[in-house]
View 1 (cartoon, helix red, strand yellow):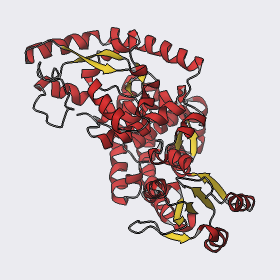
View 2: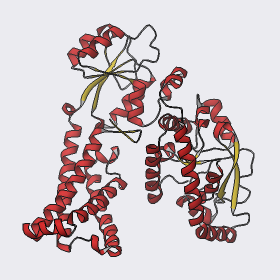
View 3: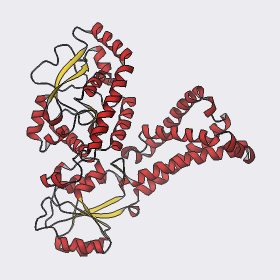
View 4: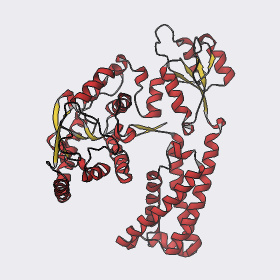
Length: 461
C-alpha cells in the first residue's frame, strides 16, 4: 500500500493510474508525429505548446477514468464493464475537451492529431487493462500471507482481502491453537508449528490478528522469522490501510490511548477554522442568488418555513442548531423521536425530493460552518436521540465528538446514507480513521471525493 494524503492506496492501482496517464501522453505524442511528420511535430512541440495541449488531454482523460470508477475494485475485475466504461470515458472527455477548446482555442489539438490519438488511446487502454486483469488474477504475482490468530479481525480482514485481488495479497489461511468451523479461511497450522508451516508454504507475510495476545503470542518465533525476511504486520494496521477505516472488531482502549493520531495540532486547528471561515463566507455570497430561488420554490411548493432548523450534536457532545432548506412537510421533523429518511419517503415535498438528490438542501449549513458549529470536513452530526442510541449500543462512539462535525467527511464519501445501528457502527470506523489521520491533505482528498459524489448524484436519500 502507498500512503498519500494520510490515506492508503493499493500499489498496483497507483502504478496502473500512472501508467495509463503516461500511455495517454505517449499516444497523443505519437499521433502528432504520425499525422504531422517528424519535422513539423518537433516544431509544434517546441514553438506551438503541443506538449501543453497533450498534457491537458491527459489530465481530462485521467480525471474521467477516475470519475467513471475505472480504478474501483468491482470494476477492475469485470472485463466487459471496463470496456464499456472506457468508451464512456472517451465520449465524456470529447465533450469536456470540445467545451474547453471553445473557451480556450489555443489549447486545442488539430483535428487529425486528436482523432488519431483517440484511436491509439482506445486500443492501448483496452489492451493494458486486459494485461492488468490477467496479472492481477495470477496467484504468483501476489504475496503469500497467513494470519496468526482466529479472532473476528482475521475473518473480517480475510473477506476484505479476498474481494480485492489488486492488493496483491494471497491469504493461505490462519495459524491458531484450534480450528474454527463454518469459516471460509482454513487453519494451516498450530501455533507451535508456525516455523515449519511458514517454510513449507513459502509464506512472505504474517499478519497478527490475535484478539488476546497476553501470554499466547509466540514473540520469539515471530522475531526469528522477521530476521529471516518474513514481513510481520499488526492486523489492525493492515485492516486500516486496506479498508480506510479502524477495525472495531479488535479495538482496544490501549490502542486509542497509545496509537499515533487522535490529537489535532495547533496548526491543524488554525487551518481548519481559517479555511472554514474563508470558504463558507465566500460560498454564502456566491450562493445567495441560488438560495433565493430555492427559498421561493419551497414556499410556493408547500406550506411552512423555507429554512428547517434541527438540534444536532456537535463537538464534545454539545447540541447546536443545524440549518437546512426544508425538504419535507412542515410538521415532519417535529416529532420527539426522529425517523431517518427513506428512499421515496412520503414526507418529502416535490421540491424537497429534488433538493435532497442534488444536496442543495444543505446549502444553509454554510452558516453553521461560518459561526463555528461545524467544519467543512468531519463526522456527520445526528439528532440527539440517534446519537444517544448509537452511544449506548456502539462502543467508543463518543470518540467521534472529539472534532467538529462536518458537511462532508471520510465516512460520507465511503459509506453514504446510514439508517441502522450496524450502518452507523461501520460509519464510526471511518470517522475514527479520519480523526486518527486528520491532516490538510486528507481534508482536500475528502473534498475532491465529495465533488465526484455530487456530480454523479450518489448517496442522496
